[in-house]
Length: 289
Image 1: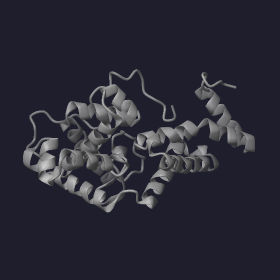
Image 2 (image 1 turned 45 degrees about the vertical axis):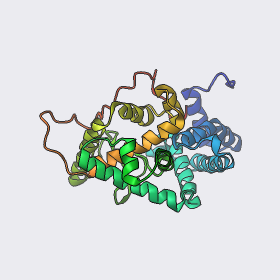
Image 3 (image 1 turned 90 degrees about the horizontal axis):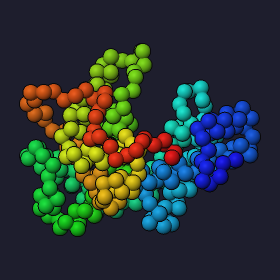
Image 4 (image 1 turned 90 degrees about the vertical axis):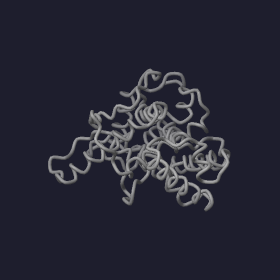
């Protein structure tokens, strides 16, 4: 058995999963759950939920653990998905359901978040650039402390590439970043719409400042937590949360705005979506690293 300093290899993970699926033995079920407990804390970190939340963090961790247990019991390898991918989605969904049920965001915070998105939309349309903190604060009649608190509130789950976009409750901007292969029987009109959305998102991403491009690349491509992104960019975790919220709001504003006149050189295809290079990161992470 691997020690604390010697993590199980992928082959050992797959062997444990295969043995459990073949036998459904209770001891293997428990071993599999314990093996993937770090995934729960990884998902919490990517959602901006940290141990500083104290008892609330423990509650969210418990919900995530319930999602993990559900994933272990329900996983069906015949669908072709990796267990870590499936478990991540179950854990994340369970935590988000808990956040929505708790309605943790006050009405004032929700109103300010909506007002800020509207302000970013208006200022982008007018200036065709990322508005500064001072411009946003003046537009909203807030001081800088209130502005940054609003961004902090908005950064938790509700403002994310993973969150629903537009009026489609099941739509996710994050999903269009990847160039997934379409099924052979895919509706051509849906395929065309997906390609158009990818193109819009790629062009919007390249409009962001380089720091924001790097931040989104580290978070969504390299799959670092917000705390780890802050370590790479030499920023506090709270500041990364604020920048993340601003970047997503700006992306939405850009994609809602009327497209500008065609540029001399068209934006690159969205299939690659080459964000700012993530050179400071040694390698990509596994979802449950």
